[in-house]
Image (cartoon, rainbow, N blue to C red; front, side, top):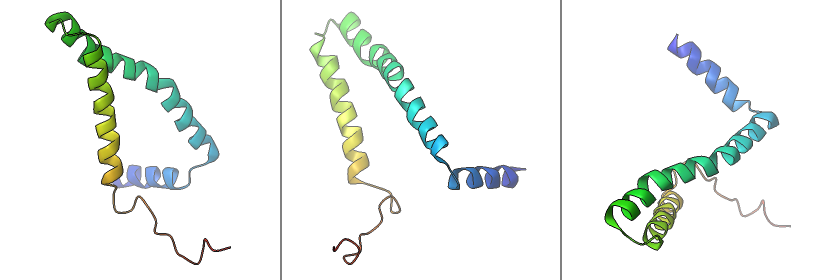
Length: 93
């Protein structure tokens, strides 16, 4: 059963269409703001601001720094197959 499900999933995602690409774009755009706000408010802002009386700027800067570090680490350590090497002959005009 697992192999059948795996084959269906691989077939579905390897043969993706423009509709699937739009669906992923719309879902990520629709969920980014509410999920990001909920995480910021529950993990950073209220515990630090309400319980420890820290100014609002500190949790905001902590959140921006955390996002920056996540992006930096992801960009600096890509998976081995995430980027294809450029051939020098393909880009010459």
